[in-house]
Image 1 (cartoon, rainbow, N blue to C red):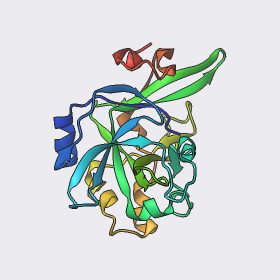
Image 2 (cartoon, one colour; image 1 turned 90 degrees about the vertical axis):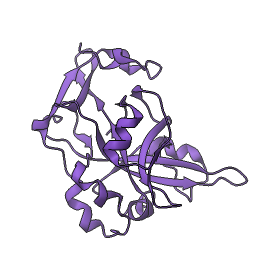
Image 3 (tube, rainbow, N blue to C red; image 1 turned 45 degrees about the vertical axis):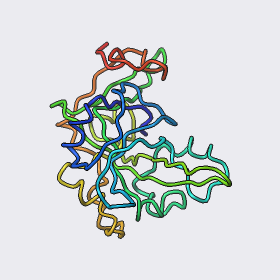
Length: 222
């Protein structure tokens, strides 16, 4: 799964990296947790321009009666997302990218769990494959939410966890965001584990276990 990640890249860098026409500003984050706002790159439903904005992490399907369902839908399995009722429509019509500098995973050890910080070896930002939705409560204002797709772990992650987020190659951003491509079969090659040789995983302090901690100390090597 993917339950915590970081994004501390300046907004100007994200705009250039993802070809966005506009960006909703946000602070650097070192311990992003479910239900919090996360940066999302999507094609605007209005003018079709690429934009970066903040959506709540935890997808609420449009048919949901209770928004708390989003707390359980922070991830969608890439193998089944195109068929699952909670994600099926978003997979076809509302795909997005979720920028990140790295993510956390925990390995079971004798005295609990050891957090690891996983990132690209070159330190560059990258993007998870995501889906977004718009939920309108009865008599209330619309809420836009998102989820991150996951797949089987690569060889680097397997000793830590059996799942990892789907990472979209930069050259395939256009393909993932192109919602004219509605056939899941045309996207299967994007939903694979990332090559392990270009990533690194380092143990970090358990300070990251507490979502209220959100500073560089969360990614400092142990």
